Image (cartoon, rainbow over all chains, first blue to last red; front, side):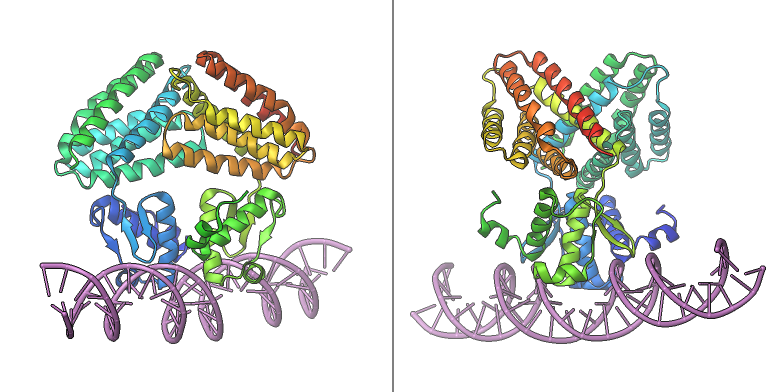
Length: 217
Length: 217
DNA sequence: ATGTGCCAGATTGTTGAACAAATCTTGTGC
DNA sequence: GCACAAGATTTGTTCAACAATCTGGCACAT
C-alpha cells in the first residue's frame, strides 16, 4: 500500500507525518472542514509539535490544508469556484499535452495501464481505487508533455480533487461512466487522431465537472 | 516595491523571513548555489531556528531553495534542462491563455501597464526593474485565463526565472530587446488577432530561451 | 607518495518545555 | 435573552538540548 518503509524513514519524521495525513485525507478518514488540533495529533503521529507544524506547512503549500491564523489548520473544503478553477486548469494542461503529443510512435503505455487498473478496480467494486486509477490516467496524459514541473503540479491537482471525491456520497456514479471514455480517448490517440482525442477529453472534462459540481452541496 | 508592511507583519515571522530571503535571492545578494546555514541566519533575520526552518520549507516548496538532507539548504541552481522545462511550461500556459483570451473587449490593461513600466525602467537604466516588469507582463498574459491557480504557479515560475537572471553578467542584453516584442504582442491582441499574438509570443519564448541558455555557462 | 580507515568537530533533524498573543468558553450581571 | 469581562485553551514563537549525519584532517598501512 504505502511505499517501502526504508524510503519513508530516510525522508525524515516531518515528511512521514505529512504523508500519513495526506493519506488519511485522501482516504476520507479526515473529512473536509475538519480541524486538526496540534496537541491531539502529536500523540498518534508520534512526532513533536514543531515537527508536526512543519508537516502542516507542507500540506498547506499543497493546498490540502488551510491555515487560519491563531485558529488552526483545517482540511480544505473546495468551493464550487475552486473546483471550476481546477477543471479550467485541467482543460488547458491535459488538452494541450494530448494535442501536441508524439504520434510516431504514440506513448500510450501509461494511459493504457491506468485504464486496465481502473477496470480491475471496478471488477472488485473498489471505488476508491477506481478514482485513483482514473486520476492516474489523467496524470499520464499530462506526462505526454514531458515536463517534470507539469507532472508535479498535476499530481498536486489530482490530490486536491480526490479530497473532494471523499465528500461525495455515491462514488460509483462519479467514477464508473468515465472508464469507457478514457478507453476511447486512448484509442483515438493510439490511432494518431490527436485532435479527436483532445476533443473527447474536453467533453470528458465538461461532463466530469458537471457531475462533480452537481453532487456537492 | 514590496507590499505594505502591515500585511507582511500580520503574516507572521516565518512568512516575513521567507519574504526577506526571497527578495535577497531575486536581488542577487544570494547567488545560486550558496549554502544557507541555519545558525548564521537566525541572527540577521531575527527569528529562531525553528521559525527559520519553516521559512526554508516554504521556499523549498517554491523551488527557490533545494534541501539536501543533513547537509543544508542551498539557493537553487537551475540546470539547462530545468530552464528548458520552464520555457516549455510557459509556452503552454501563456500561448493558451492568449489564444483563448476574450477579444470583445480585450483585457489588455495589465499588459499595457507592464510594458509602460518596462519602458520607464529602461529610461532609468534599471535593468533589474526591467526584468521584473517583463516578468510581470507575462504574468498578466496568464491572468487572461482567469485562473487563480495558474496565476500562483506563474508567479512561482517567474520568481525562479528571476533567480536565474541574477547569474547573468549583462542584464541589458537579456531584457532590452524584448520590450518592443511585448508591445507588438499587446497590440496584436488589442486588435483582436489572438492567433497572431500567440504566434508572436511563441517566437518571443523561443528567442528568450535561446538567449537565456546561451548566456549561462 | 598514495589510498584507507577513523576520529573529532560542526551542522542538521528532532524533541520538550516555556511563554506571549490571540481565540474560544464560561459565568455574571443586567 | 444579551452584552461583557475573566479564565481556559490553542496557536505562534523562542530557547536549550540531544541524536543522527556529514565534513575534514590525521595517522597508518601499503
